[in-house]
Length: 540
View (cartoon, rainbow, N blue to C red):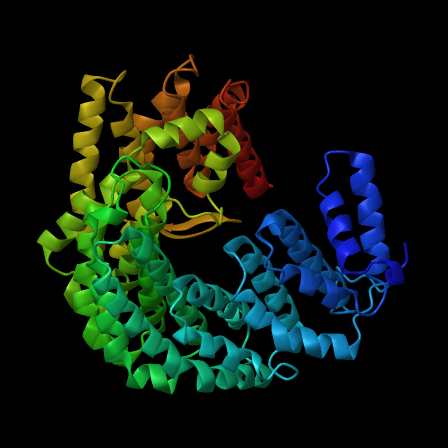
């Protein structure tokens, strides 16, 4: 089974055998493919099979596309950690592959298109732009395709290629690549965003036409994010009004055809697009870009109102957290103080945004019981995972940076009310106490680090009095199965304010923490262990 024997029909047979239920047949076929990969010309033969329009071969074509992607992954870059030096892709094969791959991606079914797109991204990571100068022009040319799935395919590919502009330190080489991309992509991107918007209006009553176009708008927002991550490009500054007009339109966009009120977990195409738009707004807000400032009041209002409409279901978690982050980035800065300084505004933020997103939801209770590791990742101090509750607490801390006395006073009213509600019916209203503790956590911390805990607290809050009245009593209860989520929150409070406790507090606390190590709840005994470890580390 040398390459000279694997002609086109035989390759089809071998690839079909990789899908065979028999493990022996699959392994034999995979060995043949591995051997064939070592001979020049094999990748082109595989691509020919991927391009085959024989509908009966859909599974085989998919298998061929995966095999080709793996050849590229292991053979294109000899310096890659995935590199297999036995795979040979000759210079002539490389040029032929690059000259045909974009066109092929645009003519195959969606599942195969995804594999081709990933292959393009793998090659581009090595060759683009210096050794693949025609890639971006080819992709941009496909913006004019009447097929929305083709447009979405090339946008996803372009997005995957330029993601590398994010989260990296600036350098001359990086800026050279960004400039190269901007010159070829910035104008067509804005044009496509507008024309796609017109198509969205035209197909308002056709869900099948709307979905791929909203997905394309979302992909363009991610490309926008990548192109603007390092600095505000001149073209985007000059055309900011056009971009912002489009973003504002979609933050207000609704269509019942695309919204399933009974769906709890999967966000709608509109939700996904709006989350991407808010992330772009947050990027500009964090950069304090002067050309963006005139648009801020309107976007603050739009994001605010959208946030008031989101449900408590997980499908809206991403949109909610990104929207809360956007408001946090504004309210914490002196330059935007005038947008939020009215007491009525602060009260609305706390009542309508902070508290609803601090409250325990049914999905949180389920995760606490059924997926405790995931719950801890989203909730625990120092975790990178965003949750609604963590973002709501960050919003409170941002409010305290500019309006500490007012925010503390308003929150203290809510804390007293929630604790009174809990006291009237501890069995059924424990969620109120949990939210009250999280409100206190939000307003009490001025400065902290994951490694060293809280270093500065809000002078308007009596941490120790709250601890003695509401936290200590919770931990002293002998039955750890009562209100386990509140127990976990109480342990988190102790862990957070570990630096503020005097020796006598710790003497009383440590036996209680040790007792909670035997709790049945995984989250409770995990938080107890974490609190003990952090206290001991601080007191060494």
